[in-house]
Length: 156
Length: 427
Ligand SMILES: Cc1cc2nc3c(=O)[nH]c(=O)nc-3n(C[C@H](O)[C@H](O)[C@H](O)COP(=O)(O)O)c2cc1C
Ligand code: SF4
Ligand code: FES
Image (tube, rainbow over the protein chains, first blue to last red):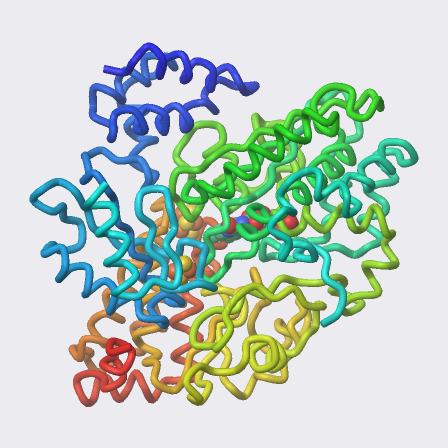
């Protein structure tokens, strides 16, 4: 269930633009930020606020990679494997992360702490290789540097 | 290094704060325009500057603005395209993070020129920090009277909204961006009607790239002649080249249009990493056909790159050294296109899938006789037959690498694989 606060924020997003539906993407992001992912129930709640059928909200959500229909681990690790990052060692970095976390791409560690994914160019190729963890970019990454980041996250 | 415009002050860590921006002459162009210039006069200045879109296509900006109907009673909108997703491109992000007010001032001037009272910055969903920087800049500019109602006492009102995308490369295509902004799946629209007549909410709309808009304050303040003094006659001004891949100093370099590729890679970028030989260059992002070391003397402006058989595109210069397998490079880029195809039209949705499938098979050493011809045949079936320009872009990696490195494909098929892969892997 969405909190009253989230619902209020969604209504504000809806009323911010000349046409209400422009608020749908911000609303889905707000819902996901609060709930962690977009379950069918949450999608239906958001759809109802906009006067849309649940399937309509679902169709929109499924188009965008940042909108998630399934929960992830506490921290989402996204390794950029597009060409510039791959030319600077992204594949080796990914192998290192798989081995260290003991999981494959698309999987979550048994303790629920980390989910590992690959992504296409993050728009930071001047400081390749780049790994995005949750909202933050970690640039010029090496195996040692990423280990330090993970240790900090696991500790905190 | 010649004159810099959009990245002129980005070395100053305080530049994103409005006090620093104003101290260095920021918002003077806006004050000047609102006091001395009619909207038509601003359009005219930008037309005379010869500024061309920095989002990839190079369309003349002033001309684009002049398509907006004159009747001021009709609502119209400005959309800033900040979706920056073309692999190898990271210039808009730097502008937004380090000098957000420059973009905001450019947006206010451009909105004034076309008579818009609402401007939306559609920013790539992953760019959380840049979105925060922009939101702060909007807040600061509003507090100082550069935004909002009755800007600087001129009677002109403008509302600027930062709108975050949610992860879809195709939303950088302008009509897909509009679909997304209206709350739908971000799939391109049929053109015509063009956005200038029926854009956001079916109202006249101008869509411009971040770097394009960030050039506008300079042009308004210093005049079109200052701008045309830089670059080439048909591609005036500077361009931010995003240098990536196997060079010693990757990064953004703002240089005059027409700077030779050799100078960008060797002088500014410090040459190929680890003393290796240069093998291939992608001059303007993966949508642009591949160059080789034989192209180093091409000047990087719209006309010269086109004459040499590629495109300036977004200015993403990717450098590959002698150890890189070109089949592997084409595969990585084609997998990107397969992943990002929006699925609306069959030649692109199916074509990108099959290109990636065949490349994967060749790269893995399971290629068959006739696979190269099959790849080219699929490209033929996509070229000019897709619903939006993404389809034509998606065939560039295959076509470019087969053209220049066909024997590498043949070797893979004949010998069942590739020795280079292990070189890249072990780095
Ligand atoms: C597949 C595709 C992706 C695009 N991505 C972007 C982008 O990320 N940023 C951008 O400014 N333009 C992008 N464009 C170009 C836009 O459609 C549009 O031409 C541009 O924003 C116009 O601005 P400009 O005239 O200032 O260059 C893309 C085009 C296509 C076909
Ligand atoms: S060419 Fe590709 S991206 Fe463009 S509409 Fe067709 S499927 Fe979508
Ligand atoms: S390729 Fe990784 S950030 Fe661009």
